[in-house]
Image (cartoon, rainbow, N blue to C red; front, side):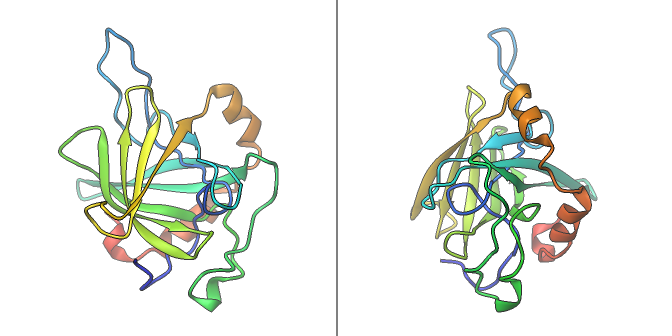
Amino acid sequence: MKNHRHIGSGFWSGFGLVACFALGLGSTSIAQAKECELGTKTKHYKTHIGKSGRQSIVEFFTKSSGGKTKIYAYGYANVDGSGPKKDIKNPNPKLRERVDKGAVFVYGLSKSADECVYEGGEVYNYDDGKTYYLKITIESNGNLSLRASLDKKGWLGESLTWTPLSQQDIAKYEGEKPDFAVVEESYSSLPSEFKP
């Protein structure tokens, strides 16, 4: 289990506040190829219901530099309407007063050779204060299949499903999004190994 550092702000539905995974997925039709760009078209997702009983809304975004692109996500709302939660289980005592809203908790994902798979990233779990390796596969129905694990191969972990939000759902939660400067501040605190 990775717990050598805290990538501080992030929360994913099953593990903490609203995990607003905004991965860019597009819809698929019989006449078109499946859209597999994470963080571009469909960026807002509803997370699984976590061990805490909460489900979050997350948004994905991309960062590029020198021809490399990485994918990130932050949470911005809770489906039950509850407010932001403090990161009380963070292994770094200095970060326990931070809230999960606007915190980047999925970071460093890169597109793999399989165009609908993103890997090489990590996810921070607000419920247990631990960081896990992460692989995301975009399914043909637009859902995200996440594999959060203790090992890089994904053998020791859990599979979760996040669903894309409709435009109506996005409008419902849009007012809860923090100023993007909050997200940028969280992003800037990530270790350089997770940046493009």
